[in-house]
Image 1 (cartoon, rainbow, N blue to C red):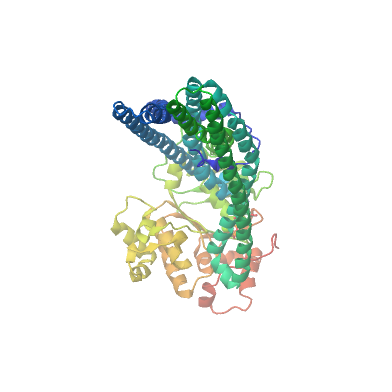
Image 2: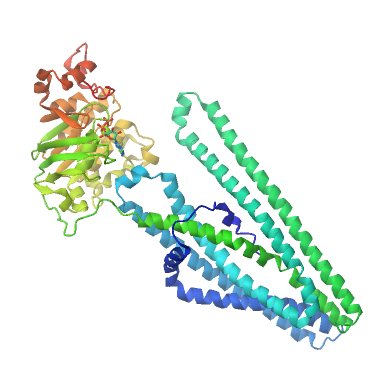
Length: 620
Ligand SMILES: Nc1ncnc2c1ncn2[C@@H]1O[C@H](COP(=O)(O)OP(=O)(O)OP(=O)(O)O)[C@@H](O)[C@H]1O
Ligand SMILES: [Mg+2]
């Protein structure tokens, strides 16, 4: 009984902001759909407790005391059958209870996790900017788990403990008052021991939890950072780092073992003491005849010994109950905190559904900062005509990606308005706004799955043929067909197994499949080999045709082909014009260009070069 829920110690006792009552009433909502199951659980708790108490009584008092020792075999068969019957009922009711508790617990976990995940998907970018993904993951996995555990092995266990303890004591009293009082001496001893160890358990479990999280994070770094580790030949340092946290984990576990290792023998000692007391004192009572016949006396001793050995489980559960509940409530608070987070960007009440659009985009005096006090765009205004191709260039950190995130309404400006075809994007539903756009982000993300699935992500109802056509159009077909399984090649996490250029081509195909009115493209900044560059350049020509396009360009080939170029610096558009106009102007654009091509080579070579990016902030 009862050692399996020491997870209750895992939680530090941190200050809670929400009252237990609020948390419990919110938690109860998750249990409400299971009224029937809960009723069955309550019933089985009673049945198991009663049969659990009757069993030892039948065995000690009846089978041994009344029949076997008196050689009365006539009634024995019946009572043995009754005993077996009780065992079977106990067994069935335990099984039914476990099944129902499992059903409730697992369903609740399932529902909570689904709710949390769906909620996370609806939250805005700004939430994810601030959140630590490890923390969110731990809420969705560990915290939900600890609530389930608190219910299954905490509350239910304690309920059944209380009932069976009380029943046991009542039955003991009925058999013999004096012996019961003496046997109960072990109870305070057990309680004292459990409480004395309580804080040590908490300390050791806090320590093991912290050290294991150290091991996990070093492990994760060692795996996902393996490329950098090997490039900088830091294998040995990494191993040393890991050994250090692993040693801490070892120490913590070792301590935990020592604590548990002293706890159990102590408990066993007290239990043996209890048995000893029962037999010694009971023996004395038997000798002076107050336990009736010798046969009856032996039956009493037997029954009491069995009962006393069953005290420990409930006492341990009860002393541990507070930890389990407190841990679960702390977990519940974290869960509800997350569920209560509102998406910062919501659809307006009667949000417009965009149908087909021309694709005119305008910024009117837009000021925005990820942190409102620190604007990264200052009073930006511009207008992009339908089907125009606009290139954004500028030093790193200037605000180029920020501009396109605002157009997609991933963030909302603090002041000013953004319109599409003259309509304020705040009045348009986010879904219909984004369905007009094909967005290729700076770090394009591929999901685990096949290449086919990854391209189809742009338009889920697309046929295989449409997918392949899109890939052909952007020039990705050639390399895909050369892969071992063609379009069905599985790609790893984040597109592992593909080159940067190949990933980019796939995200192009994905965006093209949507056939969007507005194409937004944040070019990958890493330089690309001339051959892939040629492919991408060709792909771009097709992508840009017949739609409004905004491209954050790092390659001159893209920049030169744009209808207009905006030079962004320090959150402002500082220059605008065509490549020729800007070259003549001899401003920042010209400077950026010259930095890269101080010794102008042939035009062809120059075109595959990338724009310089590491310009000091605030230049010139
Ligand atoms: N999620 C964010 N939270 C807070 N600040 C951010 C966030 N993203 C960008 N910034 C800040 O906003 C400014 C503009 O960033 P932005 O990503 O728009 O630059 P960029 O012009 O796209 O640069 P690059 O050429 O390197 O991609 C930078 O100073 C950056 O530090
Ligand atoms: Mg950027």
